Image (cartoon, rainbow, N blue to C red; front, top):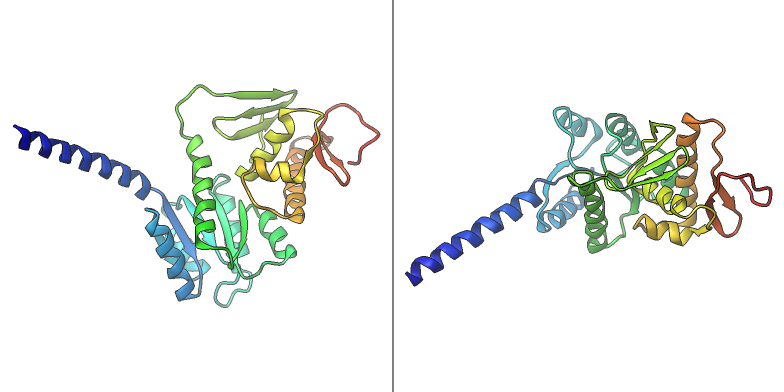
Length: 260
């Protein structure tokens, strides 16, 4: 009987491990990178974390592979083969297909101008290739944790600020009933501002809220994109106020003492 019990326990543990492995393996990361050695280095790092990984060396092969189904997250280089900005074009095409697909740029093109361009196109993160593999996999895991909240079958936790409605569990935000289409990083920035109207949030606080490591120029770019999304619905939107030299705050009342 003891032997049978031990075998049953072992089988049960094996089933639990298989279930856990299946959950991780269901997360598909696509890497679009034209340098074979670099591409495989990233792929190996993600596979060691239990992810399912596919690799592509140019924009066209990636798009062809994504025709039937998008991956769960895409890591893209800016320069792809004979396309100096192929990654930017791929990001634009992917974002047109999905507002929620996590897109991460991982590139040697690390100037502020390039980073701002990538974020304006809808990327969730823009990282330089000198980032450690541990840091890279941690950032990707954080993006997946946020995505997981969209699938939780729980009662929605809502935050209302006038025309603004934030669904914290589903990570969505709407203005006057119209979805804003915020990226995950943008969502947490808006949440941090709207949670305490009138309170000034520094760039560091916004970065912490988004669980991201961003420089000042990148945060400014995010704020500009957020404002444009509100303005597309309401041209008179001005609730996100700039407090020069300090940060930003959510305020719907007139305030002549702060910048716009």
